[in-house]
Amino acid sequence: MRPLDPYRSVKAALGALVIGSVVITTFLVFVAIQSATELRVITVFSIIASLLITQFVAHGLTAPLDEMTEVTRAMAQGDYTRRVGAGRRDEFGDLANAFNRMAADLEAVDTHRKELVANVSHELRTPIAGLRAVLENVVDGVSAADPETMRTALRQTERLGRLVEQLLDLSRLDNGVVPLHARRFEVWPYLAGVLKETSMANGSGSSPTARKDVHLHLDVSPPELTAHADAERLHQVVANLVDNAVKHSPPHGRVTVRARRGEGAQSLALEVLDEGPGIPEAERHRVFERFNRGGSGQQGPGTDGGTGLGLAIARWAVDLHGGSIGVAESPQGCRIQVTLPGRPRDQS
Image 1: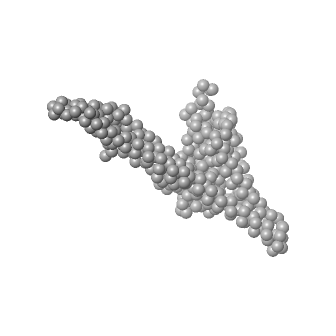
Image 2: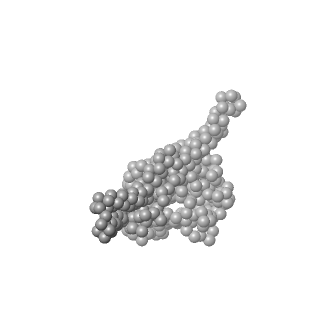
Image 3: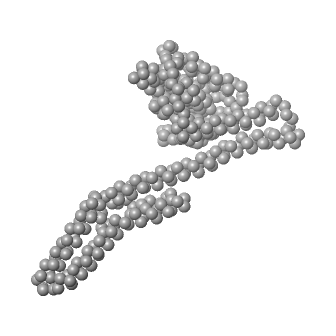
Protein backbone atom coordinates (compact mmCIF):
# COMPACT_ATOMS: atom_id res chain seq x y z
CA MET A 1 0.00 0.00 0.00
CA ARG A 2 1.34 3.44 -0.96
CA PRO A 3 1.49 6.24 1.66
CA LEU A 4 -1.59 7.96 0.27
CA ASP A 5 -3.69 4.90 -0.49
CA PRO A 6 -5.95 5.23 2.61
CA TYR A 7 -6.99 8.74 1.52
CA ARG A 8 -9.73 9.44 -1.03
CA SER A 9 -8.45 12.95 -1.75
CA VAL A 10 -5.08 14.63 -2.27
CA LYS A 11 -6.38 17.52 -0.17
CA ALA A 12 -6.90 15.13 2.75
CA ALA A 13 -3.37 13.78 2.30
CA LEU A 14 -1.88 17.28 2.34
CA GLY A 15 -3.96 18.13 5.38
CA ALA A 16 -2.65 15.02 7.15
CA LEU A 17 0.89 16.12 6.24
CA VAL A 18 0.39 19.53 7.86
CA ILE A 19 -1.22 18.04 10.96
CA GLY A 20 1.59 15.49 11.30
CA SER A 21 4.25 18.18 11.04
CA VAL A 22 2.52 20.35 13.66
CA VAL A 23 2.10 17.39 16.03
CA ILE A 24 5.78 16.41 15.73
CA THR A 25 6.95 20.00 16.24
CA THR A 26 4.70 20.42 19.28
CA PHE A 27 5.95 17.13 20.74
CA LEU A 28 9.60 18.21 20.29
CA VAL A 29 8.90 21.58 21.89
CA PHE A 30 7.28 19.82 24.82
CA VAL A 31 10.31 17.52 25.14
CA ALA A 32 12.60 20.55 24.99
CA ILE A 33 10.74 22.29 27.82
CA GLN A 34 10.84 19.19 29.99
CA SER A 35 14.54 18.47 29.35
CA ALA A 36 15.81 22.07 29.15
CA THR A 37 17.14 21.44 25.62
CA GLU A 38 18.10 24.51 23.61
CA LEU A 39 15.40 25.78 21.26
CA ARG A 40 17.70 25.84 18.24
CA VAL A 41 18.37 22.12 18.62
CA ILE A 42 14.65 21.43 18.74
CA THR A 43 14.15 23.66 15.69
CA VAL A 44 16.73 21.69 13.70
CA PHE A 45 15.12 18.38 14.65
CA SER A 46 11.65 19.74 13.75
CA ILE A 47 12.86 20.84 10.32
CA ILE A 48 14.51 17.46 9.66
CA ALA A 49 11.38 15.57 10.75
CA SER A 50 9.12 17.76 8.61
CA LEU A 51 11.38 17.29 5.57
CA LEU A 52 11.37 13.52 6.00
CA ILE A 53 7.58 13.40 6.25
CA THR A 54 7.21 15.75 3.28
CA GLN A 55 9.58 13.66 1.17
CA PHE A 56 7.70 10.49 2.10
CA VAL A 57 4.32 11.98 1.14
CA ALA A 58 5.69 13.73 -1.96
CA HIS A 59 6.99 10.42 -3.26
CA GLY A 60 3.48 9.00 -2.99
CA LEU A 61 2.09 12.00 -4.87
CA THR A 62 4.59 12.00 -7.73
CA ALA A 63 4.96 8.22 -8.21
CA PRO A 64 1.85 7.85 -10.44
CA LEU A 65 2.91 10.88 -12.47
CA ASP A 66 6.36 9.36 -13.03
CA GLU A 67 4.69 6.09 -14.05
CA MET A 68 2.40 7.89 -16.49
CA THR A 69 5.38 9.69 -18.01
CA GLU A 70 7.15 6.38 -18.56
CA VAL A 71 4.06 4.76 -20.12
CA THR A 72 3.50 7.82 -22.32
CA ARG A 73 7.04 7.55 -23.67
CA ALA A 74 6.44 3.86 -24.43
CA MET A 75 3.20 4.73 -26.25
CA ALA A 76 5.03 7.37 -28.29
CA GLN A 77 7.29 4.56 -29.52
CA GLY A 78 4.32 2.41 -30.54
CA ASP A 79 3.86 0.24 -27.44
CA TYR A 80 0.19 0.55 -26.47
CA THR A 81 0.15 -2.45 -24.13
CA ARG A 82 1.54 -0.63 -21.09
CA ARG A 83 -0.81 0.41 -18.30
CA VAL A 84 -0.59 2.52 -15.15
CA GLY A 85 -1.24 1.07 -11.71
CA ALA A 86 -4.74 2.14 -10.67
CA GLY A 87 -5.06 0.96 -7.08
CA ARG A 88 -5.46 4.39 -5.51
CA ARG A 89 -8.74 5.96 -4.45
CA ASP A 90 -7.89 9.67 -4.79
CA GLU A 91 -7.76 12.06 -7.75
CA PHE A 92 -4.59 10.37 -9.01
CA GLY A 93 -6.44 7.06 -9.02
CA ASP A 94 -9.19 8.60 -11.16
CA LEU A 95 -6.54 10.02 -13.47
CA ALA A 96 -4.85 6.61 -13.73
CA ASN A 97 -8.16 4.93 -14.63
CA ALA A 98 -8.87 7.53 -17.30
CA PHE A 99 -5.32 7.16 -18.62
CA ASN A 100 -5.71 3.39 -18.87
CA ARG A 101 -9.00 3.75 -20.73
CA MET A 102 -7.32 6.11 -23.17
CA ALA A 103 -4.44 3.66 -23.63
CA ALA A 104 -6.88 0.82 -24.28
CA ASP A 105 -8.73 2.93 -26.87
CA LEU A 106 -5.45 3.82 -28.59
CA GLU A 107 -4.43 0.16 -28.61
CA ALA A 108 -7.77 -0.78 -30.18
CA VAL A 109 -7.42 1.96 -32.81
CA ASP A 110 -3.86 0.86 -33.62
CA THR A 111 -4.97 -2.78 -33.92
CA HIS A 112 -7.88 -1.79 -36.15
CA ARG A 113 -5.58 0.31 -38.34
CA LYS A 114 -3.21 -2.62 -38.84
CA GLU A 115 -6.09 -4.99 -39.58
CA LEU A 116 -7.59 -2.48 -41.99
CA VAL A 117 -4.35 -2.15 -43.95
CA ALA A 118 -3.84 -5.92 -44.02
CA ASN A 119 -7.42 -6.73 -45.05
CA VAL A 120 -7.68 -4.01 -47.67
CA SER A 121 -4.33 -5.04 -49.14
CA HIS A 122 -5.54 -8.63 -49.35
CA GLU A 123 -8.88 -7.67 -50.89
CA LEU A 124 -7.25 -5.41 -53.48
CA ARG A 125 -4.58 -7.94 -54.39
CA THR A 126 -7.04 -10.66 -55.42
CA PRO A 127 -9.00 -8.80 -58.15
CA ILE A 128 -5.89 -6.95 -59.31
CA ALA A 129 -4.04 -10.26 -59.73
CA GLY A 130 -6.98 -11.73 -61.65
CA LEU A 131 -7.31 -8.68 -63.89
CA ARG A 132 -3.57 -8.64 -64.53
CA ALA A 133 -3.59 -12.33 -65.48
CA VAL A 134 -6.42 -11.79 -67.97
CA LEU A 135 -4.72 -8.79 -69.58
CA GLU A 136 -1.34 -10.52 -69.72
CA ASN A 137 -2.92 -13.48 -71.50
CA VAL A 138 -4.49 -11.15 -74.05
CA VAL A 139 -1.24 -9.21 -74.59
CA ASP A 140 0.84 -12.39 -74.90
CA GLY A 141 -1.62 -13.93 -77.33
CA VAL A 142 -2.50 -16.80 -75.01
CA SER A 143 -6.17 -15.87 -75.20
CA ALA A 144 -8.12 -13.67 -77.59
CA ALA A 145 -9.89 -10.48 -76.59
CA ASP A 146 -13.25 -12.13 -77.10
CA PRO A 147 -16.42 -11.23 -75.15
CA GLU A 148 -15.92 -14.02 -72.59
CA THR A 149 -12.39 -12.83 -71.76
CA MET A 150 -13.58 -9.24 -71.51
CA ARG A 151 -16.42 -10.31 -69.21
CA THR A 152 -13.86 -11.95 -66.92
CA ALA A 153 -11.85 -8.72 -66.83
CA LEU A 154 -15.05 -6.74 -66.25
CA ARG A 155 -15.99 -8.92 -63.26
CA GLN A 156 -12.63 -8.24 -61.61
CA THR A 157 -12.98 -4.51 -62.32
CA GLU A 158 -16.48 -4.48 -60.82
CA ARG A 159 -15.20 -6.23 -57.73
CA LEU A 160 -12.54 -3.54 -57.37
CA GLY A 161 -15.21 -0.87 -57.80
CA ARG A 162 -17.42 -2.40 -55.12
CA LEU A 163 -14.55 -2.56 -52.66
CA VAL A 164 -13.52 1.04 -53.30
CA GLU A 165 -17.12 2.21 -52.90
CA GLN A 166 -17.45 0.36 -49.61
CA LEU A 167 -14.19 1.85 -48.35
CA LEU A 168 -15.41 5.32 -49.31
CA ASP A 169 -18.62 4.71 -47.37
CA LEU A 170 -16.64 3.69 -44.30
CA SER A 171 -14.41 6.75 -44.69
CA ARG A 172 -17.48 8.98 -44.73
CA LEU A 173 -18.77 7.12 -41.68
CA ASP A 174 -15.56 7.69 -39.70
CA ASN A 175 -15.42 11.36 -40.69
CA GLY A 176 -19.09 11.92 -39.92
CA VAL A 177 -19.70 13.78 -43.19
CA VAL A 178 -22.73 11.83 -44.46
CA PRO A 179 -25.95 13.83 -44.12
CA LEU A 180 -29.33 12.13 -43.85
CA HIS A 181 -31.95 13.11 -46.43
CA ALA A 182 -35.08 11.50 -45.06
CA ARG A 183 -38.38 11.61 -46.89
CA ARG A 184 -41.72 9.81 -46.94
CA PHE A 185 -42.10 6.97 -49.46
CA GLU A 186 -44.25 3.95 -50.22
CA VAL A 187 -42.58 0.78 -48.99
CA TRP A 188 -43.90 -1.78 -51.50
CA PRO A 189 -42.72 -0.19 -54.78
CA TYR A 190 -39.47 0.89 -53.13
CA LEU A 191 -38.52 -2.59 -51.88
CA ALA A 192 -39.77 -4.17 -55.11
CA GLY A 193 -37.30 -1.99 -57.00
CA VAL A 194 -34.42 -3.00 -54.72
CA LEU A 195 -35.22 -6.70 -55.16
CA LYS A 196 -35.56 -6.28 -58.92
CA GLU A 197 -32.08 -4.75 -59.10
CA THR A 198 -30.68 -7.61 -57.04
CA SER A 199 -32.42 -10.19 -59.20
CA MET A 200 -31.11 -8.56 -62.38
CA ALA A 201 -27.57 -8.50 -60.99
CA ASN A 202 -27.77 -12.21 -60.19
CA GLY A 203 -29.40 -13.05 -63.51
CA SER A 204 -26.82 -11.18 -65.56
CA GLY A 205 -24.00 -13.33 -64.21
CA SER A 206 -21.76 -10.25 -63.83
CA SER A 207 -20.49 -11.63 -60.54
CA PRO A 208 -18.71 -14.95 -60.12
CA THR A 209 -20.97 -15.63 -57.13
CA ALA A 210 -24.24 -14.74 -58.89
CA ARG A 211 -27.18 -16.94 -57.86
CA LYS A 212 -29.92 -17.45 -60.43
CA ASP A 213 -31.54 -20.26 -58.46
CA VAL A 214 -32.50 -18.27 -55.34
CA HIS A 215 -36.07 -16.97 -55.25
CA LEU A 216 -36.65 -13.49 -53.81
CA HIS A 217 -39.98 -12.92 -52.07
CA LEU A 218 -41.44 -9.62 -50.84
CA ASP A 219 -44.02 -9.45 -48.04
CA VAL A 220 -45.34 -5.97 -47.16
CA SER A 221 -48.34 -5.52 -44.90
CA PRO A 222 -50.41 -3.46 -45.23
CA PRO A 223 -49.77 -3.00 -48.99
CA GLU A 224 -50.16 0.79 -48.68
CA LEU A 225 -47.48 0.95 -45.94
CA THR A 226 -45.38 4.15 -45.96
CA ALA A 227 -42.19 5.02 -44.10
CA HIS A 228 -39.92 7.99 -43.48
CA ALA A 229 -36.21 7.39 -44.12
CA ASP A 230 -33.25 8.22 -46.36
CA ALA A 231 -33.98 6.18 -49.49
CA GLU A 232 -30.33 5.93 -50.59
CA ARG A 233 -29.08 4.76 -47.19
CA LEU A 234 -31.98 2.33 -46.77
CA HIS A 235 -31.14 0.94 -50.22
CA GLN A 236 -27.65 0.14 -48.88
CA VAL A 237 -29.18 -1.69 -45.93
CA VAL A 238 -31.64 -3.81 -47.91
CA ALA A 239 -29.27 -4.51 -50.80
CA ASN A 240 -26.46 -5.65 -48.51
CA LEU A 241 -28.75 -7.80 -46.38
CA VAL A 242 -30.39 -9.43 -49.42
CA ASP A 243 -27.02 -9.95 -51.12
CA ASN A 244 -25.69 -11.60 -47.96
CA ALA A 245 -28.81 -13.80 -47.66
CA VAL A 246 -28.61 -14.86 -51.30
CA LYS A 247 -24.96 -15.83 -50.99
CA HIS A 248 -25.66 -18.04 -47.98
CA SER A 249 -28.84 -19.65 -49.31
CA PRO A 250 -28.90 -23.33 -50.28
CA PRO A 251 -29.52 -24.34 -53.91
CA HIS A 252 -33.00 -23.23 -55.00
CA GLY A 253 -33.45 -21.47 -51.68
CA ARG A 254 -35.80 -18.63 -50.80
CA VAL A 255 -35.01 -15.17 -49.42
CA THR A 256 -37.89 -13.21 -47.90
CA VAL A 257 -37.97 -9.47 -47.25
CA ARG A 258 -40.75 -8.66 -44.81
CA ALA A 259 -41.91 -5.13 -43.98
CA ARG A 260 -44.33 -4.06 -41.26
CA ARG A 261 -45.33 -0.83 -39.58
CA GLY A 262 -43.16 0.04 -36.57
CA GLU A 263 -44.18 1.56 -33.27
CA GLY A 264 -43.65 5.24 -34.14
CA ALA A 265 -45.11 7.53 -36.77
CA GLN A 266 -44.07 6.27 -40.23
CA SER A 267 -41.58 3.93 -38.60
CA LEU A 268 -40.57 0.72 -40.31
CA ALA A 269 -39.77 -2.82 -39.16
CA LEU A 270 -37.88 -4.88 -41.73
CA GLU A 271 -36.84 -8.52 -41.71
CA VAL A 272 -34.63 -10.40 -44.16
CA LEU A 273 -34.89 -14.19 -43.86
CA ASP A 274 -32.98 -16.92 -45.66
CA GLU A 275 -32.85 -20.72 -45.53
CA GLY A 276 -29.09 -21.04 -45.11
CA PRO A 277 -27.08 -22.53 -42.23
CA GLY A 278 -27.79 -19.57 -39.96
CA ILE A 279 -25.44 -17.79 -37.57
CA PRO A 280 -24.38 -19.44 -34.28
CA GLU A 281 -25.49 -17.48 -31.24
CA ALA A 282 -21.90 -16.98 -30.10
CA GLU A 283 -21.06 -15.27 -33.40
CA ARG A 284 -24.09 -12.99 -33.69
CA HIS A 285 -22.52 -10.03 -31.91
CA ARG A 286 -19.64 -10.01 -34.43
CA VAL A 287 -21.46 -10.28 -37.75
CA PHE A 288 -21.71 -6.50 -38.15
CA GLU A 289 -18.02 -5.88 -37.49
CA ARG A 290 -15.82 -4.74 -40.34
CA PHE A 291 -14.08 -7.46 -42.35
CA ASN A 292 -15.93 -10.20 -40.50
CA ARG A 293 -16.65 -12.97 -43.04
CA GLY A 294 -18.12 -15.55 -40.69
CA GLY A 295 -16.92 -19.06 -40.05
CA SER A 296 -16.50 -21.74 -42.65
CA GLY A 297 -19.70 -23.38 -41.49
CA GLN A 298 -21.65 -20.26 -42.53
CA GLN A 299 -20.39 -20.18 -46.11
CA GLY A 300 -23.05 -20.87 -48.72
CA PRO A 301 -22.59 -22.09 -52.28
CA GLY A 302 -22.70 -18.53 -53.60
CA THR A 303 -20.17 -16.88 -51.35
CA ASP A 304 -16.50 -16.25 -51.96
CA GLY A 305 -15.97 -14.81 -48.50
CA GLY A 306 -16.62 -11.25 -49.69
CA THR A 307 -14.98 -8.20 -48.19
CA GLY A 308 -16.72 -8.43 -44.83
CA LEU A 309 -17.90 -4.82 -45.22
CA GLY A 310 -21.51 -5.20 -46.38
CA LEU A 311 -23.10 -5.82 -42.99
CA ALA A 312 -20.88 -3.19 -41.35
CA ILE A 313 -22.18 -0.62 -43.85
CA ALA A 314 -25.75 -1.78 -43.22
CA ARG A 315 -25.33 -1.23 -39.49
CA TRP A 316 -23.81 2.21 -40.14
CA ALA A 317 -26.77 3.25 -42.33
CA VAL A 318 -29.24 2.03 -39.68
CA ASP A 319 -27.34 3.89 -36.95
CA LEU A 320 -27.56 7.09 -39.02
CA HIS A 321 -31.35 6.79 -38.80
CA GLY A 322 -31.21 6.18 -35.05
CA GLY A 323 -32.57 2.67 -35.58
CA SER A 324 -31.40 -0.80 -34.62
CA ILE A 325 -30.25 -3.92 -36.45
CA GLY A 326 -29.55 -7.41 -35.14
CA VAL A 327 -29.77 -11.14 -35.65
CA ALA A 328 -33.02 -12.60 -34.32
CA GLU A 329 -33.98 -16.15 -33.43
CA SER A 330 -35.19 -18.23 -36.35
CA PRO A 331 -36.20 -21.90 -36.63
CA GLN A 332 -34.36 -22.10 -39.94
CA GLY A 333 -31.64 -20.06 -41.58
CA CYS A 334 -30.85 -16.51 -40.57
CA ARG A 335 -33.27 -13.72 -39.70
CA ILE A 336 -31.98 -10.16 -39.47
CA GLN A 337 -34.28 -7.50 -38.03
CA VAL A 338 -34.07 -3.79 -38.79
CA THR A 339 -36.13 -1.09 -37.11
CA LEU A 340 -36.20 2.55 -38.26
CA PRO A 341 -37.81 5.17 -36.01
CA GLY A 342 -39.47 7.12 -38.85
CA ARG A 343 -40.41 10.78 -38.60
CA PRO A 344 -39.72 12.53 -35.26
CA ARG A 345 -42.90 13.42 -33.40
CA ASP A 346 -42.26 17.18 -33.65
CA GLN A 347 -42.20 16.84 -37.46
CA SER A 348 -45.23 14.59 -37.86
